[in-house]
Length: 411
Image (cartoon, rainbow, N blue to C red):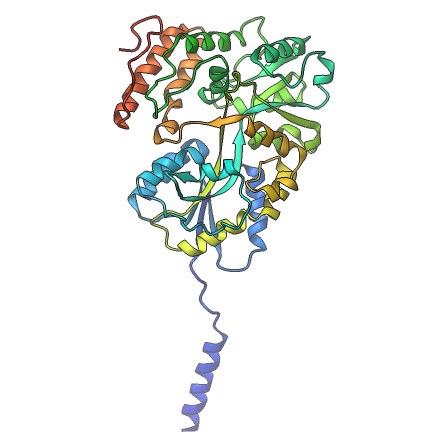
């Protein structure tokens, strides 16, 4: 009997010494850049609660990866940081949980951020950051130009870029990319497809003229440096800006920290010129969403709320130049972040429709063909118009009659 009791006591003692089982990890997928990923990792190290399993997605492939995994429903993440242009497609495919009532209604969300997390009047996400294309420059540059700054019109911008182009320096750096072309397209009187009114936008004489003028920026006596090789755009932008070989770069807050180096106060941002009262620059951002197939929905939502706390957002804004999504965080942000937010106020989003995320598969190569001298603006945009009509048909968008661009109008 004594031996049995001692054995039982030993067994109980051994069980008491065994660690409690760990709860399942919350799986977070994101596409933060390396600097922000490091900051995220440090923030999560201090966090109490369940472990976090992080997966970094390559941004160029992230949309396809997220859509395919969520549609399949197996091995899903619990929380995903997505580009806001992806949200309408994921929401309408019923791949995201609705956040109604919203878990953070008491926060002083910026209206532009709320719009990014909403589709059809329903909120599906928790806004993490705002983005916009703006004119980024060294704070010392405008004072040397003797031209109005910031530019209010495209004529002002081109005049400044020509004044800044001197010696080995070019006045304006911009990517040969469909997204980067959008503010020029809009400022020169055209636009992208509009699912609401059924216009293609790209099939007008104004669009062709906009593309011709855009290509002229890169001509021998233009104001822009030669286009970077595909895949090298960001590296080349940084090299030229750091070397002082470009005065202005069309860029966004995602690149601010790398452009500024160790001193955010050394650079500033101005809004891209509008077309009259109609803003030109595209507005976007990133949103945390919880998939329908998530295993830990409530814990994932709580994690998203923690990662968008105003105090954390303002710290990131002061370090990286990012745009917070609440007024209280913006009030404590860097001056550069507030510069970018002023640019947000003079911008407008791409159409809040699943088609928006697909437009640049056709527009980017068309822009590159014209800049490279391999096609006329009319030829290139007629091809884009045909491709966008096919996309519209697939998305059941009713289109108005096409407008000729100088050839067959894309028919």
